[in-house]
Length: 214
Image 1: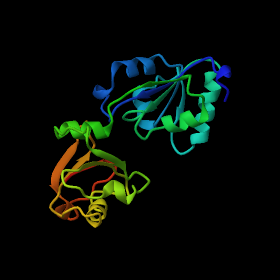
Image 2: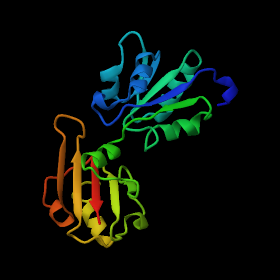
Image 3: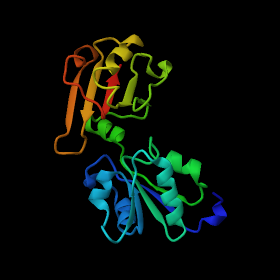
Image 4: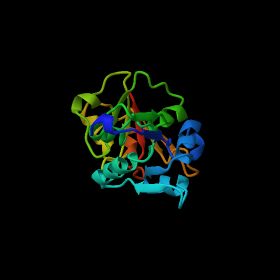
């Protein structure tokens, strides 16, 4: 789409890891002021105002979401809500492929990865961050090095049981410390610290964050 044809903004608002207390005020204000709002079902149930805003569920139909944004942009700004931070594995990447970059404005948010490190009081400036969400990182991203820390997004396939054997294949000792973080910021949040060896015998946790320390 030509940028000259776009007179309004696409505002990509990070809504944080889940609990609204962890969403920054700028994102909340943009969502409240939106005339067109796209987001996941849970986010729309939390923040959309029925009858006042045009809404679109972000699910599997990404082309449909892009068409909704394109159509609504003809009349007004469009706010797209994404979990965590827009710059970290979100719909922002698809929006940048479909639309010119100039009308895209990003409001950052707190990612689940950032929240996991903060809960553990661990600095993450030297950590390797990878995603097992719908993919498997390259072997060199997972190779053991003394002192190395890796933060990992997980899904229903790559979990607290299936990832540790992959790490041990890459040279990680079975005694390496593993933090299993799930449902961060919610009332049923859990954080369990164990070892790679012991993790495979614990209840399986997916769709969360794993952090391994070398």
